[in-house]
Image (cartoon, rainbow, N blue to C red; front, top):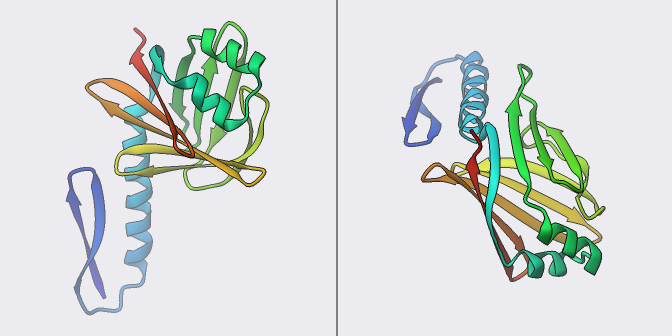
Length: 173
C-alpha cells in the first residue's frame, strides 16, 4: 500500500494512493498526525486572563462544589498559562489569589487531577475540531471543559449535565 496525506482546514488525514507493500508509511503518518496535534495546541499556548464568567456558580453547584468553594471560585479571576515542552507534554497553570493549580499531560493519555474545589478526578485531554477538550470523571460523574480560540479569545465552555458555563479569556500582554 502507498499512502498520501491530505491537509484540509485544521485537519490532516491519511489517504490510500495505490497498492504497495510499504508498512513503514503508517509510522510516518502517525508521526505527522502527532506533530499536527502539537501545532494545533500551539494556538492555546500563552498567558490568558479571564475577562468574563457566566453561569459558573450553577456549573460548580452541579459539579457538587460546596458553598465556600463556589464563593471563592466566583471571586477569583484566574490567569491561565499554557505551554508545550520538547517532549510534547502540555502544562496548564491556573493562578488566582486563593490557589495555584498545575496539570501536566499528553494528549489522549488519562491522568489523575485534583481540581480547585479538591475533587479527585481522572482526566483526559484531547483535540477535537480545533478544540482542547478536558474530560473529568469521578464518582460516576463526568464534566467536560471545551476550550477554543475565537476572535483571539479563548472561550472555555464548562458542561455538567444540562448546566453550561462560559468563561472568556484574553491574551495577557
